[in-house]
Length: 305
Image 1 (tube, one colour):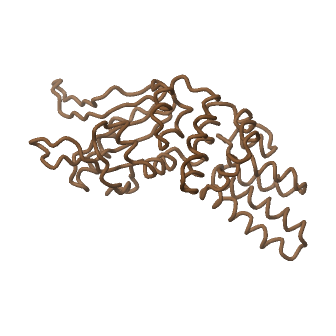
Image 2 (tube, one colour; image 1 turned 45 degrees about the vertical axis):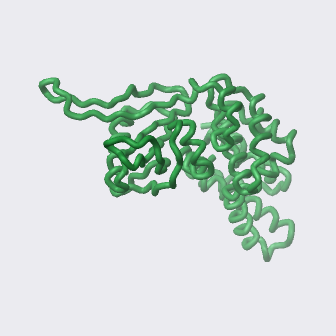
Image 3 (cartoon, helix red, strand yellow; image 1 turned 180 degrees about the vertical axis):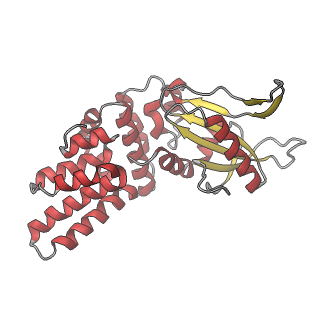
């Protein structure tokens, strides 16, 4: 699947006000801010400008709202939140409110971040918010109906595979085809990380329309179409059936290259030996949804490491 930060960045850009409502209630979204910071190669996962309560210290009431997404324990997070927040504040001239969102259960920091001098005197203090999705009730998110946040449902407290149907039902109502397809794609990809890929794929097979919507995702199409075009070029002089075989092989390898690059060499050697069209198509149908490299190896028919 796409990386956590690229998926989250797109979700925030799709419905920024909903993320402001959820994580900074009462504020109003103003605009998206650049994620690239002045110190390369640092970049935030998502950064927006908001308008909140005006104060004497901030008469305009304008702030930056910075999001960082995490799946693993990382002792450097408090320092990173401070560094990124200060760099963003320096660049945009806005006081930055920082939030780190943990998708999966792990050890999390307790803000604020403090640094003490040799005499025990406080020399640095930086506050930030910590959101643990496994503590957020899934029923609350479903009741809110905020489609921009629904793709994260699988990580929520009490989430089950049964929630996938009402979630995708709401997302299918998004009028813009590209936004609908991307939202559904990310929802399914995240669900596969929490539930078994086999169970999610079984759900997709029961819902042909949902599967078709996902395959309309610009990200999905970019991967598949480029691979197919490469295969067509290779097979143009080798007959129609051979061209279809090469097109499917190239599309599969394109997915591997984009999502599971370390597997590319072994996958290329293996896929080149498969000429059964039905088998190649089955691999291509399942591979884009693989939640991790181990599942990808299984789908490709590679031995486990």
